[in-house]
Length: 297
Length: 235
Image 1 (cartoon, each protein chain N blue to C red):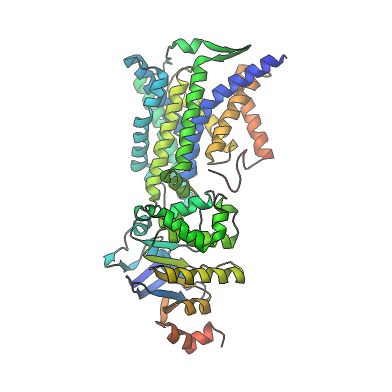
Image 2 (tube, one colour):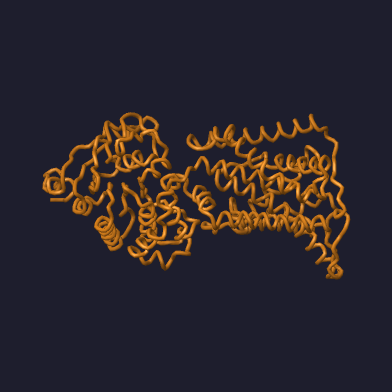
């Protein structure tokens, strides 16, 4: 196979991986701070896709801008879901029972969101038409789909902002402190419950924005979550549970593996490559690519 | 400043504290000594807001704080250096110290706080960009103490600062506590298993056994008490 082809697959994979990376850091943030596995994460992404879609169709808002506009309402939605539901299954109590309750809650939330969306919006797939979705930047012989390129860049910028927030601001550091040692965080004056709400709000806002970016080139339907939630979980585990840079790298790796799998397997088996790579990493490096006993963020 | 009355705490039916009462006056250094499992750490946690009370009350500067969450107590000026240090392992040394001054009253004086802490523990300045989890046990204890000082506390709670450390490091830690005491207007409540060192540092002390205060008094009285001498000083 010519080298040019290989480079093309790598580039395509990384572009898609950027959006996977953005959706995965939301999940990693929630898990890292709250120790809650949020099975509804993909459904919030789906809702983000729909909001971007309706902004585009109803008000002519470009989906790249629409993706940014999803951030404030979904942040508030995340805070509300935390305040009304998650707060009941986090904090003190028997850890095993709490974990069971969290699983039932987020899985139930996922089912309700998927089915309510199907009922209200019908299962019909929709798509946003943009000029750039069908055009490509050419760099020598390499083609880069414009929608995916813009989505990749925006994902990169948003992830960068999250990183700066977590490492350069007091509140961001307090979030990480609450993830590390919640009890000691309380003794420093950090309101751990508020930090949980913040993590959930930011986590949901990020995955909704990632959904908006995805909507520039991916069809939108109520069950779209199932295709992505598994990828997000794989990315988070690959990166080392709860690590934000790890989840970001995990997302990129998944895009890359998906794309390279096409070289040897048919399209329908794209995710088989991801799972094979996943099992290999878990076998060779069970703490994940970036997982250490000590991690930087 | 601090008034604990009839305090009881239970963990799942197991009584850890049974009607403990004690007082700490403004500017005082009070030590609580006693054997393992006496409830010393539970008492400190109860004051800091880490466990809920089964009975009794905790008054801080005339305010009942028994029902406040730990972060609200921290904001009132109570800094707790917990047992086992509990530094934030994935944060750097500097970030740990910054988190110590998270409460608004301390945030404004962060630069002063850093000067004080780095003056007291120069090794922390050297390692400021290192992850706290990579520090040795002694350095982590210094960091935990420094983090407590960063809060510019009015009441400093020190829970077993010597735990798990070698004798030379322990000596350094106690010297640092004595230095803090000299240079700061801070009230200290210290819990220790090392009875001699703790009693020599303090103004006044209590002996806690199986969840009850069995003895209380000033330093000389306690050091001279035959029960203390027999049980803890080995004479």
